[in-house]
Amino acid sequence: MKILILGAGAIGGYVGGRLHQSGAGVTFLVRPARRERLERDGLVIKSTKGDITQKVRTVLVGAEGGPYDVVLLTCKAYDLDSAIEAIAPAVGPNTTVVPLLNGMRHIDVLAARFGDAKVVGGLARVGVALSPEGVILHTSPFAAISFGERDGKPARPALVELGAAIRKSGIDGGVHQNIVQDLWDKWIMLCSLAAMCCLMRGTAGDIMEAEEGEAIMLESVGECRKVAATVGCDPGEKGMATVRGYLTQKGSRFAASMLHDLEKASMVEADHVVGDMIARARKAGVAAPNLRMAYAHLQVYLARRARGGIGRPAL
Image (cartoon, rainbow, N blue to C red; front, side, top):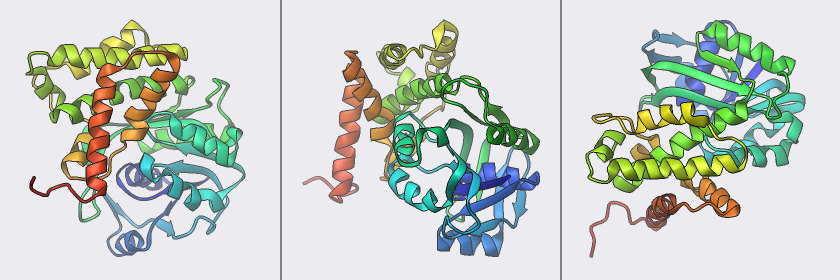
């Protein structure tokens, strides 16, 4: 199996590195500067599951070495358009595109470009970051990716083979029979967490210290759940109990990566994670006042960032 991974950043580098370590046929589509560093230093992973440094195969254009059996898309949502252009030459008649992005909007965009049959659902639950030196830092005790057919049918041979490679690499997950529900389950938690962390500028535990913190967090979770229910993807009480447990734990340092990006004055996935949830709520007639407030806050941040106003003293 020929696997192309767009980028060798945090998630792509970790997943691809573990797959390569276990013998899978992995190629990374990277920019020139990243290729130069990888050729010089190798792909370096510092992980709770064991450190590795290894030489990997890289290409600068998608057409090189293609078409591929599987293309793993691990970009940020705001880079989706450029990512599509980068992988397009690598996609052939039998290629399966596996996006590991948050939310749902990217699936429609990818299906419109490559055809509905080529695009499956996928998500990652991997606590990783990329250091300024290009080292992949995996600090959490878990690492899992899931993928599957969006119509709930048995997985195509390419996904079955990818699932076997994932298990061999030591990463949890693999083929998921109901990947759409899994996507919604993660989106409910992430949207609630990102919206509230960014609005209140703190971790989940910090929010619990506010007098109305727990109530506001749970209201936000409820807004997301109602949207999921309108498309038949309510997680059920067991699933919701897990979400509530994570987001209302006192003393928790659990925070969305969007908060870290915001605090660094970086680009954020506001439109894809929070904005699209609100758009779906509006279409379904679901009230989402907490999410609306958080999204407006994020839009103001992006507007200020766009005009270069972040970090400047107020007049």
